Length: 503
Image (tube, rainbow, N blue to C red; front, side):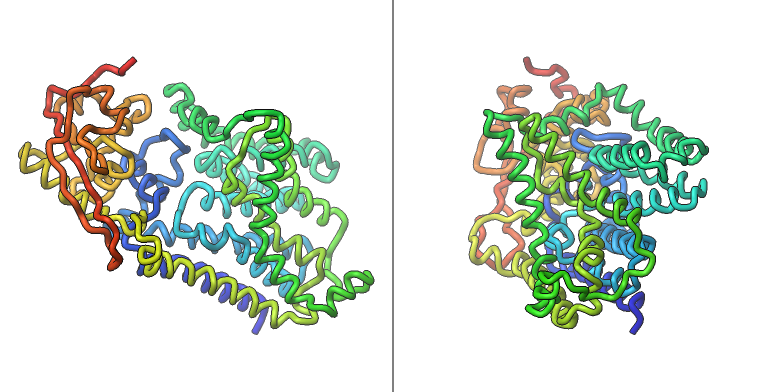
């Protein structure tokens, strides 16, 4: 079997399994997917928490699948597959053999971010093919200078910024590389880099205008997600904590490398004797390029965390390590001639099997040993249909708007046949797609979970005298003895919707 065929089969099979199993076994989508579907229903140019690309793609999958939510799992699979394709192409461009490129895919696939997070399609996962693609296009651009590559780089950069502003870190890394190294800097005298900037800027204009019109709402959320320091110790602890999490993310890669090298390989490495075939076309320039994009983004994040003391979410590291497998194959020898290459492949397959077994356990067994409510077993569809029936029985009109706690309200937006708009936190600033006059004309359903007679505080401040008009229980989607979901509702009829913001 050729290396390219092996890479295609391995990448395709693992990606498909990470989509197929949740599609079959998960009775309800994870948190980020539910929220993304609720945003996507509006097809806005921006949302409270993120730029719009993840939500747009989820909405597209909703229509492609005829109203299904399982498309989210296949979007993650497509992200992985596209990422692997770019990793293969980049490894080959950097002078590695076909089999080295195959192993670069295998080693990347056993890092944590390419496994258990897969079912939760979110902007972090969507960044994987964007980072890999941008690095690939940049290498192509500075190698040959073709305008099409520079244009594609600009388009990918814009796509990335529509996904998550964290992509700016990679854009800055590319810009700094261009300025520092003569082989890249010479292209500044050509139209290429300026075409990249122009394409990115033009594509970003609609979102930029949206940000200006909405007081940079998404930036406010992004800033709030990075917790500031509570003392001097955080300037040391937070960067080390982030670094430790990223090292732990590579545990599977380290294990496969150790199995592949075996005692014989480790002795050869220690003795600095060659254990691999010569990497065709390898050069210091390619090595510099590889190490730059593998480690500079991480170094920048660690430096920012150390200087500011801010805590960065571990999962923000998801796209930063798309080159880990390429680094391993380049500097630890081509795994195809490792002393124990077959055992290394078996180890990689075993790691994939273990992680896949974990999500099977989450779907089938977790409710039995946890004995508490879990999101992927929440009766989202049954709850949404029941709430729409409550509204239509009481009002005799289609349900157009729903507010309340995000989890319950988002499920109504996703699963209710009429797909009402989610009035997030009953706040037009946080829900810029909402026309308050329309809400006033059509009325509002307020929903929340738990054994509470009054709605969540953010709603209660607007309706201090409002108590639930009714409630019902819905069993969770599991044979385990999970406490049922308690769902409360209250109807704000047309003309009675609060239009003021509480002090």
